[in-house]
Length: 402
Ligand code: HEM
Image 1: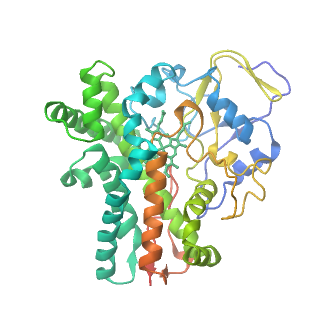
Image 2: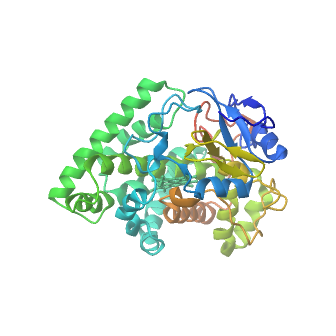
Image 3: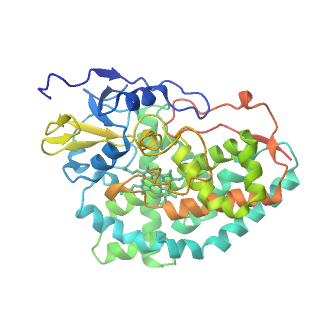
């Protein structure tokens, strides 16, 4: 452990429930204090550093002296009882090895390739909106639209047949939960892993134009092992469903509770891509912090020296509210034209699906705005129930009318 005498005291970050989409007051305190903080969370051992300021977060997430591979065998302090990715997942690897894994799917998620999928995504949205209109108000827009859309988007791209989607949703929810206990989450990880293992075997025999077939071809050429394929595929499916479904629900909630922003998007449709970027910056996507890293040598970050072997976290959510980077960071400003937010992370572990996520958010919001210009909450905002004890934040349901 560090021998410095001026190091900050360790805070216990219990990760209490934060209301609606409020910014976690613990994060605010750490940002206000500046520099790196030391934290202990409910699970794992010891304490860890956490970077919250924009520039510190960029450094920690992009400096090769902070390693993901070095997490192996360490039970570092964390929010959830289990680790989210499977052991062989990209999240636990470092470049250059990590770069090779990411390359096996990069072309399937490129901006150009994702743009080609937009018409298909618009068709999925149209069909779901037709069904929602037919169901008649009030409806839970998450159940009728944002969730099935998110599941369809990533699953079609991965190559998961529609008849398996409901099983997949069940597993992914257990994997990202910290509230169901370690055993159930680990079991769900194994089951979804076995599912993708079988799918890869099928696609190796009969390839199609989907991500799993692409990965199976890479496996055949010796560019990744079956375990790596499975762990990466699971991570993409889990993130592709849950990050998008809750982030889009949060976006819908924010628009319906900020009539001035809602009205602007109705009046100025071209503003949508920029508005989505601002909502991505503003939304506190997750509770606490994601996966940590381990310092492989002593590193100076601002005023503190992180010692070799010490765990370090970086909060993208906090960095997105750093007043030194974003003017008036706690307000939603669709005119923010320079918006280098870190909602998709930074450095080598930068999100694998940002173009897919962006395209899906734009298609969903555009579809809702066009189809239901009078869309509004069917209950007072105070009656919306929020997910509890979960890693990714979002509402349980959003009842709407039009
Ligand atoms: C609004 C939606 C999304 C948000 C906010 C989001 C955000 C993030 C963030 C913050 C990271 C972590 C960076 C780090 O570990 O330092 C990440 C990683 C990742 N995301 Fe996303 N993501 C979203 C959608 C998606 C989608 C659609 C996919 C589908 C492929 C995806 C796949 C992944 C994967 C595989 C990783 C791990 C990358 C690695 O460790 O190399 N995400 N994402």
